[in-house]
Length: 470
Image 1: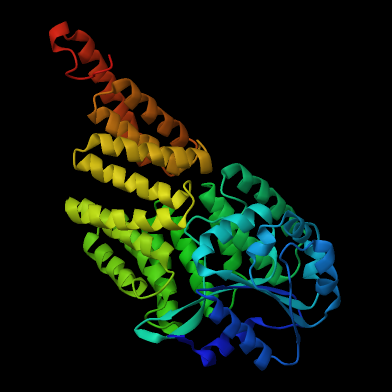
Image 2 (image 1 turned 180 degrees about the horizontal axis):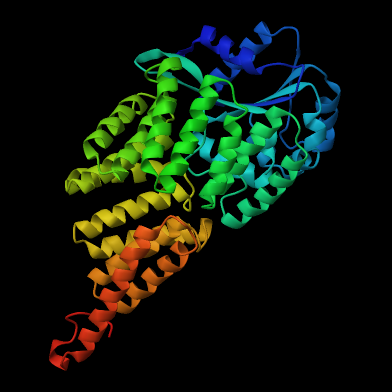
């Protein structure tokens, strides 16, 4: 191998999670098979008090593997490729139906997934084993150490900005939310409550119920004790405040999160980069583009030197693109948004919310550049994804409807412009935080109605001056 794992660091991290006196579900993303075997061998050599078993799952049945799961107390049980579970309906149905029985055993299920299929793993596992992340779990990824070409490290990771929890559609998330709230009623242990608070707040955020998301994050703060856990919660609270337009609160909590991370993490840690990205978006919202660009570039400088940091890197590129668009450097803006889209089209399915956000961004940019046909095409792509995934009552869908209306106005298609802006208004009226957008949309509708009246007054030989579709 050209690169080696930092085994001293590996041991520190694994010691925190490997414990066969209780159940744990541990996922490790690896770039190639040799490293997977290195990790397995390391665990077997350094945690000798527990048995080690590798499950043979290829074309197997749950009935055949059940005795291994149930009867090998205090054991490490390896699954070399978790897609062997996800590709076998008998196995994933077994994990669904016997979830509580599996979790009652004192075993550590250590599952490996190739890093190239990380996003597919999150999406597929939530679809086929919706309760997967209710298990007590830890998720790691083997990645290169910044500025150390010959070294690798094991890092805790998270998924993309839009959670896969409860599936990707709003309806499936609401169903999962009902189930989690019922489960919370019977929860008595703090660890279980923290796990449920986190999942519940995430789903509330994803479906646009930001006040409820904030409520459950604040419940989390009353229990949490460890510094890095607090940093994660502060970051999540910051994102909620940003969504409800309280940018000063968003700034306050994001800075709290970064202060903790800078104290306890390496300066080139991807978690720091993620927070720098988030801070940049807040500075964009308050029009401090100099600060926004500064923090976006800090994030990019970290992420470009880390393998498999695609989700955060695409976010960083998107942020820089938006900043350059706002300062009217359209050439630079287009360069960075294309970088973001190239990453997202490679790692996501064709209908992922993050991809929709980038399609929206490039659409707005093309509109600013006067390339209205391209703007219309990309915004339609964004709308199709958002309607399919988020539904037609989500604030992000309203944003796309509003942007589509602006394009149609520039194209002098007044009827469609009015139709799409009204769709946006109908959504924003269901939420508390969009008074500014509603005021602008109301003025837009009046302007369109004025243009329609003016168009109707024109003689035939001057038709099309205000509207081409009247």
